Length: 343
Image (cartoon, rainbow, N blue to C red; front, side, top):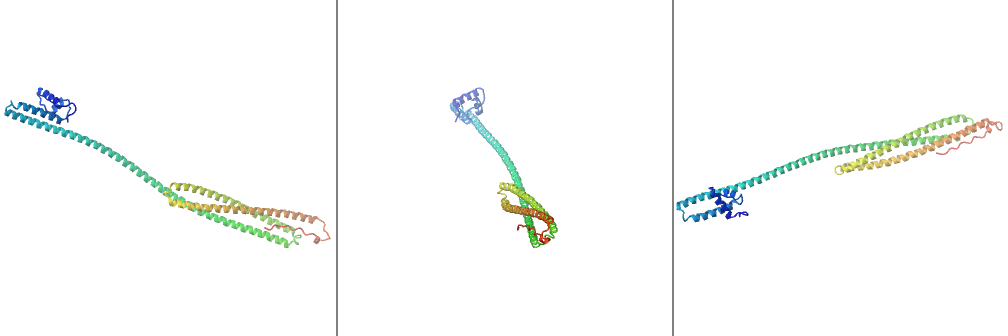
C-alpha cells in the first residue's frame, strides 16, 4: 500500500520530469523526485502501469522491430528495477538484522556485566560467609575452653570447700577438747576443795597459767575464725565472679544458640553446679556464724572465770589477814567454791 500523499498521478508527474531532463526514470530516481517518500514496490507498480499504457498507445504506430527493442529495453529496465528493489529490500532487511544483532549484542554485554556483578557479589558473600564461619568456629572453641576452665574452677572450689569443712571439723574437735579440759578442771577443783587453802596460791598460779593458755587458745581460735571469714568472703567473691562469668557466657551462648546447642547444655549443668555451690557457701556461712557464737560464749565463760578468780584471790587475802578463830588454821571456813557453768 502507498504511503499517505503517494499516488499514480504523482508518480507520472515525477517520471515525466525525469524524462524531460533526459534521465532514466528508475525507481530510485522517481523516489528521490518524490522527496524520498513512498515504498519502492508501489513506485515500481505505478511505473509499470504507466509504461504499459505508453506501450499500448505506441504499439499501433511503432514498427515491430522497434517494438521488440522497446520491449527488450523495458524488460531490461524492469528487471534492473526489480533487482534493485530486491537488493534495496535485502539491504533494508540486512540493516534491520544488523540493528537487531547490535541490540542483542548490547543486551548480551549488559547481561554479561550484570552476571559478572552478581558473580562478584556472590563471591564476596561467600567470602563473608566463610569468614563468619571461621569466627563462629573460633567463638565455639573459645566457649569450649571457657567452659572447661569454669568446670575446673568449680572442681577447685569444691575441693577448697571440702578443705574448709575439714578445718571446721578440726575446730569443733579442738573446742570439744577445750570443754573437756575445763570440765576436768572443774571436777578436780571439787575433789580437792579441802586442799585448796594450803595450795591455793600455787593453784591460783596454775589457774592463771591455764587461763592465759585458754585466752591464747581463744585468740588463736578467733584468728582462725577471722581467717575463715576472710576465706568465706573470698569464696563468696569468687562465686559472684563465677556468676558474672556465667551470665556473660550465657548471653554469648544465647546469641549462638543454634550453632552451640551442646555448649548451652553444658552451661545449664554448670548453672546447677553453681546453685549447689551457692547453697554450700550459705551452709558454710551459717556454720561460721555458729562457730562465732560459740567463740563468744567461750570468751564470756573465760571472763566469768577471770572474775571469779579475782574474787577468790580477794577472799584469800582477807583470810590471810584476818585473826585465826579457835586458835587453829583448821577452824577456817572453806572458801566458797566458784560455780562454773556446764558447757
